Length: 203
Image (cartoon, rainbow, N blue to C red; front, side, top):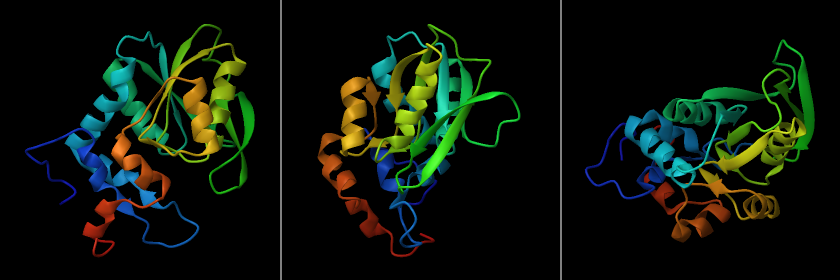
């Protein structure tokens, strides 16, 4: 399917077939979810799906995780009519910050940071990111939010893999993702059947 095409029939999670397989080899994520953001209807439907479980929740602020979580997070914040807080990789904010060390999906030790002048006790925060693989990045973001006494209302992402970290997050926090039950095994095996339609990286 052309990346900009909007099908007449749009079943739940139809847009997942727009995600592209890794064409750069080892050292890169196994797929590129950001391709679906190029389709305005796909992005809109994705946001509607991840927000559905939070319709009756009180949310004060949306926080997105560097970097792809900025796209979904800002879109979610706009949809909700709420502000957006960037949780950044260390060294990019020019104000006083709090930091949290973590290990990302590739096994590298990193540090993320958040500005000190927004989060406060009782503030209800929805955390948004693109993908949860090992869960290390999201757990660090949760720790940063809760360090201030703010409340994590929930976690909203495109997908949560069935890893130890992914299961921990689903067990301890209200979560929303776009993966139907029948596609979860493909996500966990890091290969989607829809990839068969990609004959070359430029398709």
